[in-house]
Image 1 (spheres, rainbow, N blue to C red):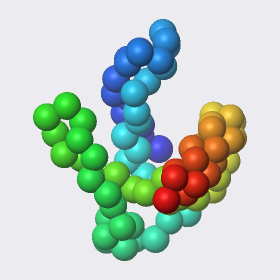
Image 2 (cartoon, rainbow, N blue to C red):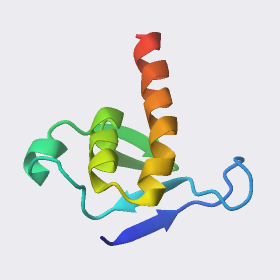
Image 3 (tube, rainbow, N blue to C red):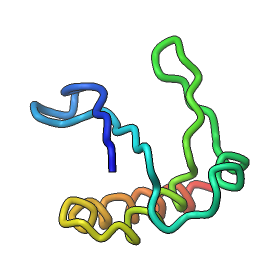
Image 4 (cartoon, rainbow, N blue to C red):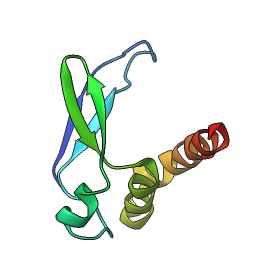
Length: 86
């Protein structure tokens, strides 16, 4: 899996990344199917399509790497907060 890291501290403390760009998502449907569910966020002056958090969690869970397992609780908590706000 090719991975691009963008960002820097972004106010979150040294050594953290603002976000990753994943070139392959594990366990998801075709690019066309997943892209149709994308939401657009603004990053600086750019509008960037991103997968909804539940799809990112599904792929992260499927990948199963140690770094994926470590971040899953944070992603799942964020999703609970987002759903609670609706």
